[in-house]
Image (cartoon, rainbow, N blue to C red; front, side, top):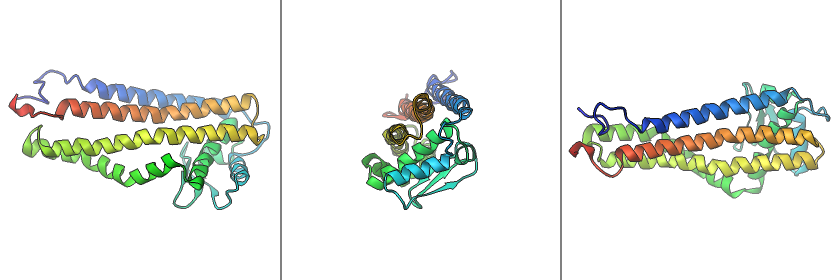
Length: 238
């Protein structure tokens, strides 16, 4: 009996998955520790995350986007369907450098949406396709193996569908980097933060960006594993 063509030996491609998991854990720990550090640094302006968000949006002439609280920790996001910047409990009423930075980042997404930023539009168009691909890729692969072997066309279709989810992760990177860049620049130009406060916000947002980089890297490593295990040939005949 053989497993993925490697007999009873340990599948060496599992290390690709482990690397992705370790990257994700490292990035999550980094963002949590950095956010916690700068959550203890109160901004000189004394503005809350919600107040800073409203001021930034008004400064850009965006008056149809509302700012609302949302429960949870670091659950902040911008909903383009309802045009709402949703700020978590640790950001909405907080006056820290970290809170203001996160609020500004979400406003960056609202600004992208307002101006029709290309990568954001592309990512939004990918959402249904990527969700469809991520949900059905593994069932397709397993069905292909069960009924047609490792070289089954269903397996190849499953890998292709998974690649759509990977593409979504890659497109997300420039969207997130751009939102952070806008946030830092506007907080400085609007005088909401200054000097070392801006540097602190930059560190918080860089740490947050690492979670997206780690997610993309993990998806790429998983795709590589699928290609190595199932791509191109039927190992049932080996």
